[in-house]
Amino acid sequence: MTAHIERINIPLTSPLIIAALLFSTAACSNPSAVSTSNNKSTTTESKEISTSDNDTQTATQTTTQKDTSKPDFTTKAIATFDEPWAMTALPSIDSKAPKLLVTQKTGELFIVDTATDNKSKIEGVPTVAYGGQGGLGDIIVAPDFATSNTVYLSYAEAGTGSDSNKFGAKVIKATLSGLETATPTLQDITPIWQQSPKVTGQGHYSHRLLFSPDGRYLYISSGERQDKDPAQDMNGNLGKIIRLSPDGNTPTDNPFTVNELAKQFWTIGHRNVLGMAFDDSGQLWAHEMGPKGGDEFNLIKKGKNYGWPIVSNGRNYSGTPIPDHDTRPDFEMPKITWTPVISPSSLSLYTAGSHNDFPALQGDFLISGLSSKALIVVSIDEDDSATERYRYDMGERVRSVLAVDGQVWALEDGDGGRLLRLLPK
Image (cartoon, rainbow, N blue to C red; front, side, top):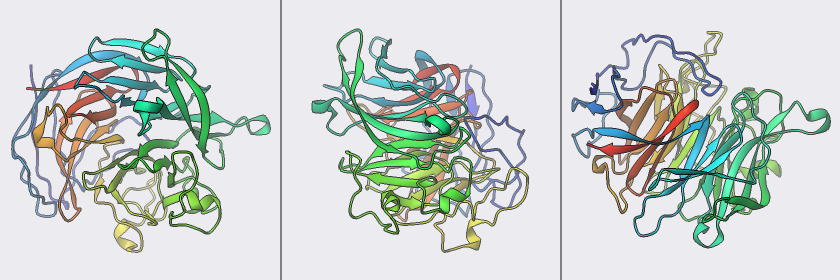
């Protein structure tokens, strides 16, 4: 059977009532009643997915459509994991099926040969502080991986001594050796960065990693650790997007100079950024989980303040209001906000490569959704406006999406989460 998805155009002034979604420690966004994006009603009958072509935008959110046809796809399960968190692809040779590195929050790292569906564990992973939203986090390959075999990982780390009940994100680089053996291993581990200060609680680490297109800079998202105020505090690196050199040093052209720690900061005023990606013109975009409502999609600009916790289009979990973004034009406005939330968990740009499974998505962003159980497609117009273009009901919480070389991969969340390849119909 086929799951059919229709797009419903909803003016921004219309209420949209949805069933309440369970709050998870892996997704700190709750739905509320008013939507500022183009949401769709969905039904799920199987993993074969079909969509309608009714894609007219509302007057308040318009964009030039590159292709009016909405791509359909089926999914093929490649492997299963327990609490997977992130994935990345090793550089591929001669259009071969990619090998993917997949992290599990519990502290395991795997390599998956998608040509054979073989999954192998990688040894040498540092001890992680598993619990809540913490554990092993993101993984990316260095720009010079083909010659260095260097990878970067983020994870939650416990403090020591009297601070053993405090936690923070840490980023390391390591050499991935023995790729062609039965026991690949991380070696030569070097610390790159850590959250400061470590705090109690195990939420909102963010710790997403991304290299600039030219490979010269490493971007790290640092969550405010569910403590709000650190996002505006220049004496700590929580609630910020960090920009470093690949060796962990601070570039001299970063925008903030009020103290040594602040020299790491690229932007401030963030809550929980779990997705960052560059568009095909080299601009940095990120999505951010809101509180009760108000998930965001932002164009990230050097030195800007994104307003959390002073402004948000969501509300506090207690129901008390937070001033909306439009009350403070001195803060950067999001390009899209979602209420009900989508609980965005990763972000990837689709571009054709040696494959081109979904040409209609060229240059679009793919967002994985946790509470929404969806794959969301966002397009960027020439004026840098952003619009939710399509939404696919995936039937399960989606932890990660990866578009690489014209192919698309998705990771389901939780125990038994499947690695899926999306195949065009």
